[in-house]
Image 1 (cartoon, rainbow, N blue to C red):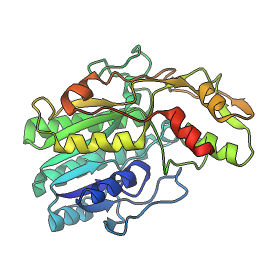
Image 2 (spheres, rainbow, N blue to C red):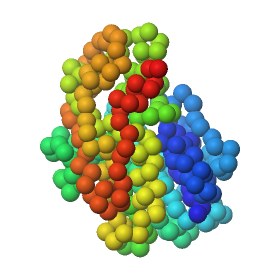
Image 3 (cartoon, helix red, strand yellow):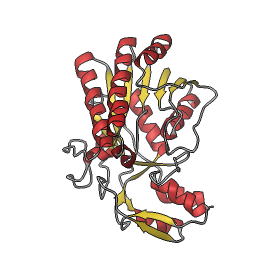
Image 4 (cartoon, helix red, strand yellow):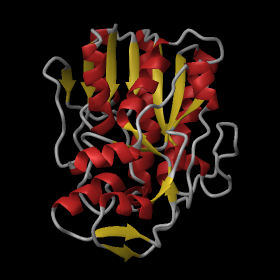
Length: 301
C-alpha cells in the first residue's frame, strides 16, 4: 500500500508514518513545518517528505499525480484552540480550503480512501458527556468551526463524488513527540516539561475541568483500522477516538507531583470531555488500550 500523510512530520502524523512503515507501507508526507508548538519535527528516512503547504493547490496536485496514492491520512491543520482565536482567516484558509484541496486532489488522482482527522472540540458546551457522534455540534472557536467544515467536505466528497472517506474525532491526544513549546502546548507534555525543569505546573482555571486523554499509539491504530476496514457502515461516517475515560487537570498534577500555580480561565473551551466509543468499537473494531497514568509513571522513572 502507498499512502500520503499530510502533517506527517508532526506529533500524530510522524507516529502514524513510523507505524505504517513498520507494516510495510510505502509512505510520503506533506508538511510545511509551521506548527508553533513543536520544538522539532520528525522525519522517517524511509519516507519521502515533501515540504509544502496544503493550500498550494498546484504543488499538491503534482505530488498526487506523480505518486498515485492508495490512501491519504489528512492530519495537516492549524491546531490548538487559543492560537486560532487570534487568526480566524488563516485558520479557516488552511483547515477548510486546504482540506478541500486535499480532497479534490484525492478525487482527481483516484485515491482509494481518505481518513480525515477532526476534533472533539466540535461538541462544545451544549452536550453532556459521554459525547456521542450523533450529538448536535456546538463550535465555539475558529479551530472547531474550520475542522467541522472539513468533516462536511469529507462527507460531501463521499456522497457526491464517491471518494471513500472516514472521519475521526480525536479527544486529547498525548504521548511521544507531544509538542511542548509555549503556553498553548497540550497539557501533559507541558506539565512533564515544567516538572523536569523544576518549574511550577501552570494550571488553567481551577483545574477541575476533565479531559479524555488518549494515547497517540491508540490514535494511530484508529487511523489504520479506518483505512483498512471493509465493514458496512464505515464510509462517510464519523467516529470518536478517545480512551472512553477522563480525569481532571488537577488529577494530572497529582500524578506528576510538585508545585503548581493557577492561570486565568480561557475562553471558548469545554469544561468536560469524555468520548462514547461504542460506534468505534462496533464498526471499526478499535479498542484503546493505553492509560494516561501508566504513561506518566513511565515518564517519571
